[in-house]
Image (cartoon, rainbow, N blue to C red; front, side, top):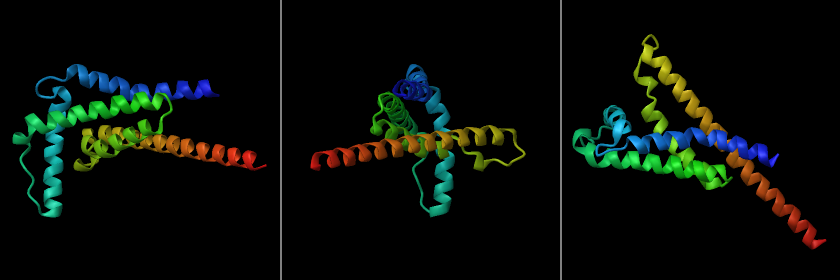
Length: 162
């Protein structure tokens, strides 16, 4: 059962590892294709948040060369490190992947900015729901990991007192 669990974690984490590796290989001076995709999405999120909270945020164009590049590096680090730790069964790896998914999913898969009749809507909705399912699987892993360690501690305490 331990081997099957390890193989399952490897298959699940390979999604994040391969994605981080691709982002790292394409990363250039401007953040690569991930930076080019992220800048307009951040600009759209900035407009939405500024209209909701009545606050002006800085322009993404001036923000692009430094902050977007750092955001892409942070995403690479969180996905890569989180996936490697997750493969070895560490709960902190699952936590890093959950944080990455919670922050990036609403920004990158913004299906809510499109109408249901637009072709981009279905693609983004599918990707969004896939990220939600991945987040659910990570939360399940995290909960199971924490419950197993608590059960082992209780059994160890009972055997020592007897």
